[in-house]
Amino acid sequence: MSKPLRTGVIRDYDVKSPSVKVGLVFIYLVCFVVVVVSLFPIFWVALAGFKDLQEYVSSTSIFPSVFDIDRYIRTWTQLNIMRNYINSFYAITGSVLCALLFNGLLAYGIAILKPRGYKVVNSLIMFSLLIPATIGIVPLFMNIQNLGLGGFFTPLWFAAGANAVFVVLFRQFFESLPSTIIEASKIDGCSQLQTFFKIVLPLSKPIYVVVTIFAINAAWSDFLLPYLVLGDGQWQTVMVRLFIFSTQQTVTADDLMRSVVFSMLPPVIFFFVFQKQLTQNIVTAGIKG
Amino acid sequence: MLSSPSQLPAKGEFMDKQERLGERSYKWIYDLKSWLIMLPGIVLFMFFVWGPLLQSVHMSLYKTRNIELVEFVGLQNYIRVISREDFTQALLNTLSYTFWSLLIGFMIPIFLAILIGETLKGKGFIRTAAYIPNILPGLATVLLWKAFLSAERSGVFNVILGYFGFEPMVFLSQSNLVIPIIIVTATWKGAGATALIYMAGMAGINPELYEAATIDGAGIWRRIRYITLPAIFNLSSTMLILQIIFIFQIMYEPLVLTGGGPDDASLSLMLLMWRYAFGGNMDYGRASAVAVLIALLLLVFTTIYTIVNKRKTNWDM
Image 1: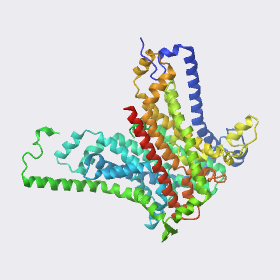
Image 2: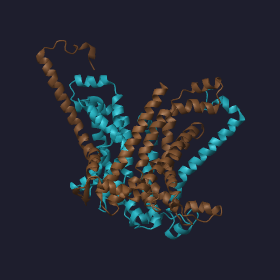
Image 3: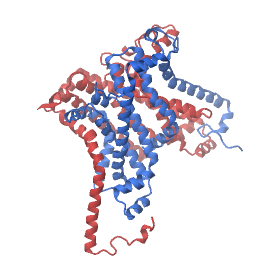
Image 4: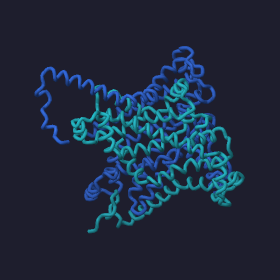
């Protein structure tokens, strides 16, 4: 007997029945629709970016009359999107570093060091998972203003260092590390901090990859707090700029579509480069969380 | 790693009083050092998460001017906020968002996971394609849908309507359609990623279970009903509460798509909070009152969820 091909509900022996065969055709049809629905809007916006305003507003065809890449280039240079790309890069770099360091150390304390009273911190973090972060955005904004921290990335960087989801991801991973190794490093005379950087960190690369990916994505996509913090200043990220475009109608519809494409391009490229890590790790992280 | 712990003298075996004291102070220093390691993270959580939550409660009791607290007004902010018509509207809308998101957003990923799980050829491709909307920035996808739903003849949905000979529609001005539309766009973004999580959960099912069930005479539907669905039950109840929390903070979707319109028909509680604070009024006191009310509602939901969930698991035992 050959190795069974199907691992789902429908088994190889089911496929002999004609009604199951029809069912399978139906499944593939639905999946085809899913693929089209998922991808079509992305292709559509990329193609719409090739249209000029006149064509964008009036044409009912998906395809532009000419594929003129100059229109993209013109929007890119006229709106100086490059500057926003660089700003987003700053925002991401600082956020990722803060996310890894502060959440990692906090989780290390909760999962491994466990000083007296650590459970209080753990419950507070679990509690903050249940309350959307946006709820406190008004007082947070006021505090940032009061401290004179508005206008630059600092609050955004440090905000990434207080992410309950990241702490929980780290904590679950650290808890799965063999305790004997940590005991051993203690006996070998490592301090708590040394144990973290020499033992725990090198053993935890997978979770660091996951949190890095999440943090990059969050820092790229976030715009509410960045908008409040960076405002109209010189440090606007791509998403802040896009948000301002969309609310203040300062750009034409075709430029807006091209800006949307510019904002989607880096995540898409990032996805295809790190596809494997993304789908694998995020699923395992999701299951655990 | 040279000596196994068992070879060391057991705790307290050779300890006189002095050493025991030493151990106690050692423990004390250990705790202190550990707390110092956790301190930066705790400070950040206080500043960015816990502090603002408490401050919301505090601020909601004050009359505010700009970023200053002017005077203590008790529950007046709450009374003012609740007595206005837009609050009732926003509350009902938020419940409507929740209803639609449970109807559409909760079921579709489960269907998707089962369907994609039954494919052989092209499974990887289908999975990737379904996941891609999730990697796009939320704001960009909302703007994308705004263009799709444009009232112009060139809006994609109106082009499609045009093919079938219908007149163009102003989709986002239909007050009874606007919430389901927003939920559909959010589902488009999230369903593939959620389906992936369910698929990972289903991958843990031992295939022999299905075979044993077949021998017992179970058809495909009954295998789904009695094997697949129970296997992802816990996962789905987690996803359910996460989704409710997520949908309660729905804000930028209506903000960008409709501005809360038409006639506040898509105004969510969170958007109401945003309006009070950043919509030109800068009324941070009332904005905080709305925030506290949202938090209370969520607490009620999660408590109900925990109680119901506990009872369910008890039955299972």
